[in-house]
Length: 353
Image 1 (cartoon, rainbow, N blue to C red):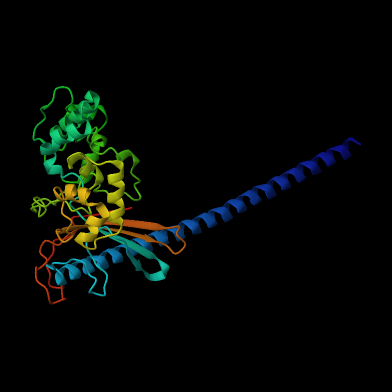
Image 2: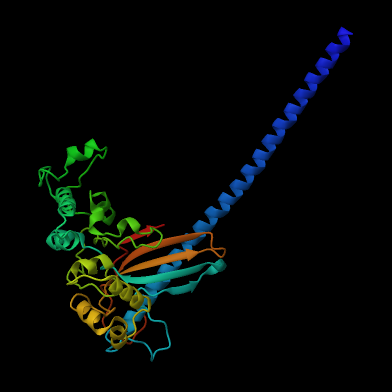
């Protein structure tokens, strides 16, 4: 009787071992299947993202060619509208250009004047105006902006001496917060450096609400020219089509009301047509105020920002490329459409998202 009981115990133990092994293999099989599916999905996503990146390159190159060709053929027209020409216009007016790419991918490209946002090299000359417009009588805000300029001046000067005893930051101050090799102690070379500067957010009240997927990187600061290259837009005026709203708000006498901002946004969305239409859209008063500050002519552009967004057929994958292109050497003559011989500077900067 005891022996029979022992045999039953052994059979039960064997059954448990077998069931355990079966369960283990089931779990491993499920994990392998899941891993295989995840790997397949990841591979497909990576392939689509790579394809989308190549399409953004292609779309950007195509639009670069069209901008060059269009400006080459219509460099000095009195009426910049193209009602008499059956072709798409390629002005720096922020209008969408939709391109059908291979494999069902779609590209939307916008062209802007690169002269957007604050010119980093001119910031010190804008200091008083920024403080007056942004802070008014708000002493706390005045101190916040003063601190930004103090840190910025220490960042670009050529020594390790604090320019402002309360607000400045030099090497020891950066090391205390875990940032080595700061500050640069020379001219800012890359726009992105400005986002290290303490209190930079106070230069643009909308910065914290900007969506990275839609906001241009030069909405706050425009890209500096490469080293040893003169800035061809140093003395150029902002265009109505590209001047950031926060810059208009700071520099336009009287600022902008919420209705002014909405009107500007709506007029920009329509793209450039002609002068009477712009005045009709903005209203004579707002158009007159803006004319003292900006130009409405999209041809007053020599350096462009090309913003290309490519989306996959199912809409699940998208890539974005923002490029800065200098067309300073474009010949100012009409007639010959062959622009292959035009010598242009290379891209100043390309950013991928």
